[in-house]
Image 1 (cartoon, one colour):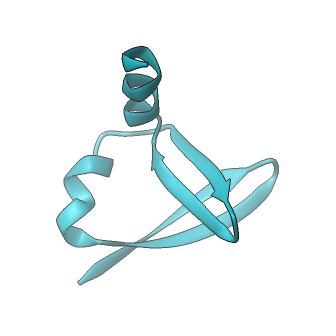
Image 2: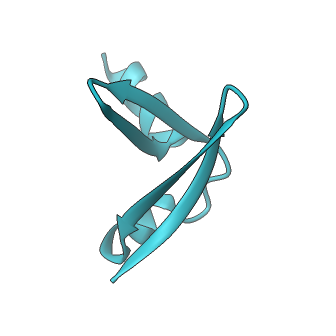
Length: 56
């Protein structure tokens, strides 16, 4: 099963489908980070991005 998540970046809307087993990662997150890597758009909660930056 999967869940569709819609995010906005630079005035454009993107829809992502994520597996429901990852749903807990995204719960409670009201901020998202959208990154473009090659032709892929990567969506993740901002809290995870912040933890990665402070770890580096």
